[in-house]
Amino acid sequence: MPYPIRTIAGEEEAKALFETLRIRTVEKFLDVAASSKLREQLAERTGIDKQRLLALANLADRMRIKGMGRSYADLLQAAGVNTVNELRYRNPKKLVEAMAEANRQRKLVNMLPPRALVERWIEHAKRLTIKVTR
Image 1: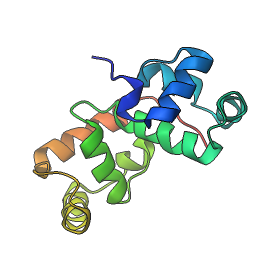
Image 2 (image 1 turned 135 degrees about the vertical axis):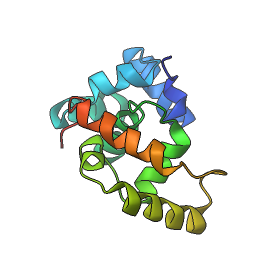
Image 3 (image 1 turned 60 degrees about the horizontal axis):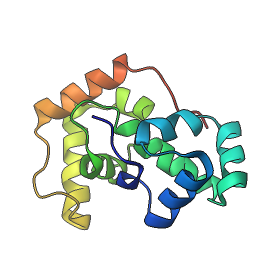
């Protein structure tokens, strides 16, 4: 099921993306914000900062992982995993510990993902093609 763009973007950002390019979904946003050059063009057209667009693109990319919603994608980032490519190389045990610590500090989710789920995320990340480039 495609996520609406408001899942990752603030109200004003979502409005700018829709009015400028008719972007309604996270998947479509990822298509138009995957590369640095595309984000630069998008920044010029929407007025959204390039670094913010990169952060949104990485968030959208993490949400391609099966079983990954916005909350877990934010938790991964808080634990130091910004991209799908970074997730591929993580040790599941250490990542679970890092997510638990990040959640203790920031209270991002009510229930931490079990290690088996984190292992599946890592395996799924290994099978995905790289979409976002710096």
